[in-house]
Structure formats: structure tokens, C-alpha cells
Image 1 (cartoon, rainbow, N blue to C red):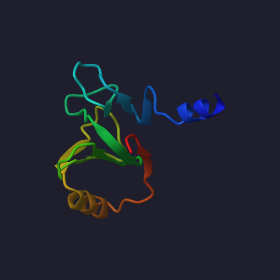
Image 2 (image 1 turned 135 degrees about the vertical axis):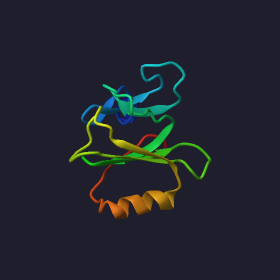
Image 3 (image 1 turned 60 degrees about the vertical axis):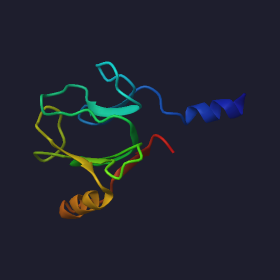
Image 4 (image 1 turned 90 degrees about the vertical axis):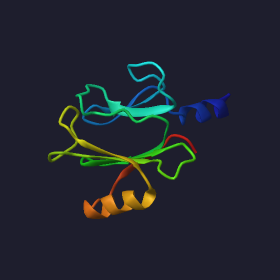
Length: 122
């Protein structure tokens, strides 16, 4: 019983807020038909996208890097803050789908380091 509780306590459930209302949730994200884990803004503007079927996510206050769980080479998305920090409804820029080398170039161009990381599907 204790082992089962320890196993379940490591599972991702519900919502997790990353920064300023950017959140990860399972399945439907305020609309029908979303697949797997999704990331988007709880309070969305017209330019705020929802990215579904997430495998992992890395982030800090200026950038979010999302890896999708699919077999395509172009399974990456990057969200970059328009201003000083990410903020829903602030027209942050979403790029993707991208290949890994494009993501690496974006991270290097933005001098990005010290990212938080969350793996949702292993």
C-alpha cells in the first residue's frame, strides 16, 4: 500500500502553472478534442496558442520550450516573451513546429540558461 502511494504521488495530475497563467493540463483545455498534456494560457488572448500532446517542457521567465510526443522530426515549439517576461495576453511569440537544431539556435540566440524542466511522458 505504501509503495502504491509513493508511486501515485509522483504522477502528474490536474494543472501546473509555469509562469503568469501559462499552464499544463491533461486533455481538454477549455475546448473539446485536445490530445494528451496541453500547454497554454489560462487567460488567453487571440495570439496565445495551445500546444497539445506534450512530452516535456523547459522554461524560465522569458522562454518556454515544448517537446511534443510524436514521431515527426518537427516536434518542438518555443514561446518567447514579447516584453521582459512571459505574460498571457501580451502577444508572446510562438514558433513551431521546429526541429531540435532550430530550438538549439533559438536558445543560443536568446542566451538562455538555467531552465526549469518537467517530463510528462517518459
